[in-house]
Length: 267
Image (cartoon, rainbow, N blue to C red; front, side, top):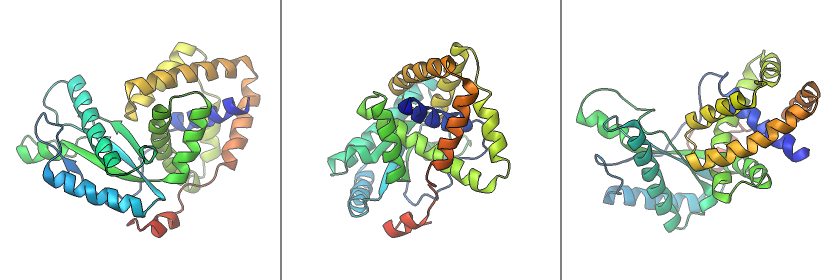
């Protein structure tokens, strides 16, 4: 039961993303890695920069990196999703080859969905063909990865999803600290889950897709969520909601900027 409740806390964080405006607020100091048209190969300049990034990460063990893959709008949406995933993987594999531990590197892909600009010119399209690097606190990632591993997800999926959840978690904690209606919002979400399992699964798949989680990870998550959802509705939903709410109150804050300052991350 404890393991199920842990998953439900994480699942609630995913759901809340749909109710909270904005995204991850941490200022990013890493430069983007850009690519040529229909290309996923690293340029010499990109390799030089990633070498420096790997060196920095070695000296700053408190910080993990979330790697976001992107593409411009030319080509089909499906192909661009694949291409952006390949770009993220190329960058991740390169950092690993330079000595960065795999579990410090998360990846998610957006294809053409999160363009930096929409002008129809070469400079704009080049900006959109990118991999974006985001610093993430290691302890929050580890906290969520442990939960997913205990639920039986594969190591790679647990890592990938832990990074995505950490980004949501960070935003939620910021909102929780400043939103006086937080408790009302939480009650609304916990008591407003769809009664129909198919609707609930479809809703979560949509959330996972928006978060850039890979199709393989989505399948594992959907299977786990289906199990948890079935268990939840076999119990007393009101009682379970209260338990989850109490657990959420006990979760540690994730927005302590001191950890980034100690690691030398620019704010």
